[in-house]
Length: 228
Image (cartoon, rainbow, N blue to C red; front, top):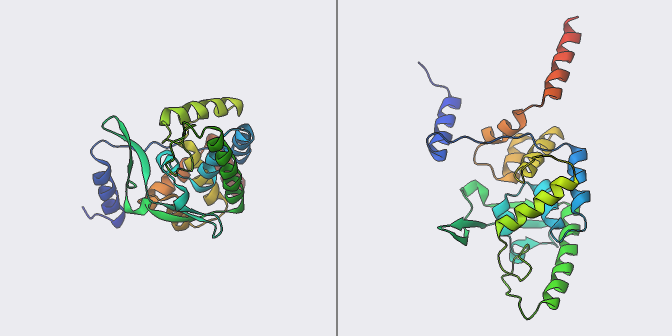
C-alpha cells in the first residue's frame, strides 16, 4: 500500500507525542465570548495575561515564564524563549517544548496597551510590598515577585470563566480561540502556526476543523440550497 506525504507527517507527529497520545481539541470561544472574558478580567491584576492568551495564543507556561527582558514594547514584539513548568515536583524554567515553540511574536496595539498598564500596576505593587518582594523579572509573577503557582492561575481563570458564563471552558481553550479566530479572519494557516508555535500545521488545522453543530448546520443548509 502506497503511503502519502500526509501519512508520513502523521507518523512523525505520533512519534513525537508518544504511543497513545491524543491532542485534545476544543473549538474555543466566539468573538462575543472572548470579549466577555476581557470584560470580566478588566479589573483583575492578570488582565494583560488574558489579553495575551487570547490575542497571541501563548501557552500557560509561556505566559508564566515570560520576562520583561523578553518584551520590547517600543518595537512591539516579544520573544518566547522559556516556559514555567513543574518538573519533579518543583517549578522550573525550561526551554519551550519544540524548536517551533521558540518564536518572535509581534504585539498588536491592544497587547502593548495592556502590558504598559500592567507594568505600571506591577511597579506600584512591588513598591507596596518591597519588604517581601523577590524580584525575578517576570511579567506575570506572584504577589511577592516569585514565579506564579499554576494552580493560582487556574483559580483566577475559574472565577473569570464563571463571570463570563463560559461553563467548563479550559484556560487552554483561549489558545484554541486565537487559532480559530485568526483563521476565520483569513490569516494563512502557516502564519497562524508560526504565531502560536505549533510544531505541525496539521495541529493548527485540527483545531480549526473542530466545527460546531451550528457550523455544520449552516454548511449543509448552503449545500441544500445549492442543490434545490
